[in-house]
Image 1 (cartoon, rainbow, N blue to C red):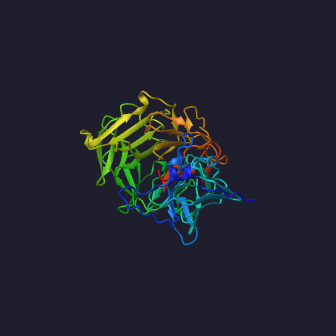
Image 2 (spheres, one colour):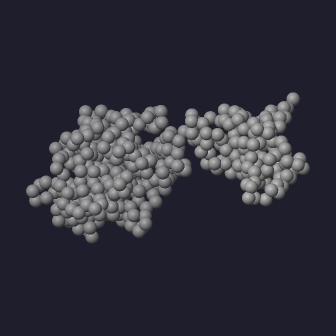
Image 3 (cartoon, rainbow, N blue to C red):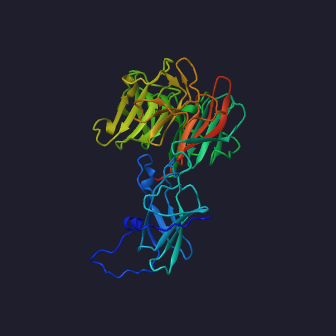
Length: 452
């Protein structure tokens, strides 16, 4: 038998708002309407009291719901609801499945027993109104990263390095079969074109040192590669032109702050950072004080917490073949007076964090740096663990494997490519001691698009 218990007078005094003394003393006793709903604060469940509920008046059954779901893990098993009415009702009761509860203002109820209906009878007992109450909680852990394989193999078993770039609104994978360098294109990482050969690049091209200018605002897209004192470029991916430059180029670094950056030699045989400006190499005035990588390094760009444009160049091999643990920080600000606003720092001088590492990839995601793959200075693979830095590259720790770990099918590797697009992380290919992969994985933080 259902139990119907009516609202008590004590509850009425607690939850109802009456008219102020300055207001009219006339009260419409025929009104049956809910004006507010909330949960009482609970220190063990901070999401409860922060939930904002909307009341929708409808011709039949009204609806009470929270647009923004409560925090993942918030329990609705034992909650204290608060109700506010337009006028003091003669009766109000809450129906949960086959049980009807009285409301005292201090009730601890199980709000998982859906559906839940609130029925109100007006003070003069002439009208009744019913509302359905829907209290929603995020069902996905906001701190969990979900990973999925998009493509198991873009191409066959080419035993060569790869380079993946964003060119316009497409992913482009570049790889060699030992004779020709080919390009595969995809709009989404799932559907890939057939390979097309590239023309105009020199023999022995190291595709991992190809840099892409990808300016989607100005619709300017160009690929760059350098060998000795020759700079090669392409605006269509497939056809490359060569131009002799004024100084030898040790390696191409990255496209950052609207400039293509490179490491060049000088008359004294020291290295210097330079950038391409109007098809001319312009020295930046930034001279690395210690060893600087020329191959198998990783780069990442982001806007720092101090709102300065930053780029990092991490790990890699020095010219003498040494595996480096360096973390070079390149920063731009109008407040930096020297070197046209650019500054170069080496973070690993006093915070080593890790030994030498090469063949890594790195992204800036969810206000932190995430580092994937690579090998250490003993040629040992890092495995599937992800390194993370919350202080913009100063210190590093392993990500919580319960929250963020690559799928078991993802083999430990180096020289993979990592790109962030539309709040997703894409990992492409790579190689280990036996296999060159051309697979694609996509990762995403559950709460990346949630309202903060």
